[in-house]
Length: 466
Image 1 (cartoon, rainbow, N blue to C red):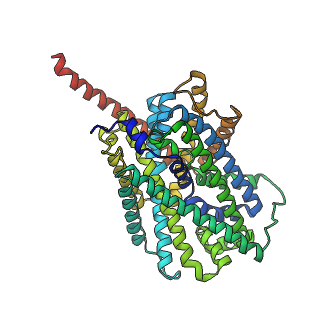
Image 2: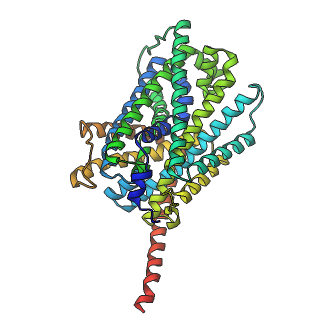
Image 3: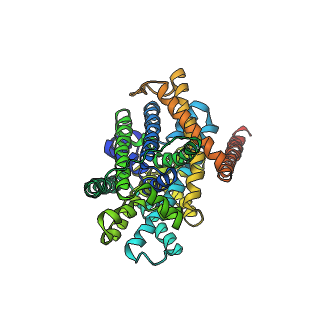
């Protein structure tokens, strides 16, 4: 039986709610469960931190609104790679796919799986015992392998897995917010700790914190990577982005309200001074211990473990579609574009997971976040900037959705993200060099692969000419 792409999309493609779940699971991950404590301790104010999280949400909404029009114009799997290749040519498309493959998916898969492993271990052993790094890597490897297996067989299993894991994540976080607010508001009042003055020092610290907050919001473009495999994409793609981003905004602000009821800003600052900033990483668990009591610590750790599993699932599902799209365009070995009888890119899924395992055994979470923020921030700007070319030259099909308040909305995203990227590169020169190196390697790889393709095509033609 011949399995055509249209048949696959119509009969076995992903529906609206799977798309929503991909957006939500791609966005909610390590960020909201770690960076809030860092932010409050840095700016010394919960209220100012709320402003920063709202600003990060505004940038995400502006990016999502613009992305919704772009993916409705180009409803093909591959996301930013396909959008950039159409607007700016194959080099930009390749670099976007290259950076997404290395920094956008392999890194977060590794980070989320290692964080999940830590929380699983915390739920099974006494908190006073040290965590074995070898055990973390072994468990993380098992998590990545399990998600790769679940997403490499058929759409039904892949869709069901993503839907179930994301529903669990949303439900658990919603319960955390509702119960946390209910208990916390009976114990404490919301803080009134607005900064006495807003000076250059506060702005500088705020921009640094906003970089990590923006990383927590990344993922609103994740739906574009499976766009070609969605049922009724012209309707479901924009709706998936809107609903997913809206759900995440509500959850993020709710979590930060709970954190503010559990810990005052001076308390978090003191904890950071005494035990280091790493002590603030499990801010959700720290808050739950205070609000719900010590007896719930193991349960909370296991809850966070399940949340992070959903993130790994989303990254494995969407990341493989970049390799598939690059293989189809001959910018990566053709075998990466192969699908099984159910239309699933099994080989690309396995390869993406293998790259992630390299990070699991070699990279740290902090370095991944900073380097990824730079590389992906720059290329997300490049992707959003294509809206001007698509509008001018009418690339793609007739869009089912137009970005409102054009060109103000994309301009807000471009200016805001550009400022954050520049500040990060200035304050973190080593990480900036690492991101630049990744781009340079991508450029070299593009031209080497293009040369290799021309050589192969020339050899294929020569016998006929002879």
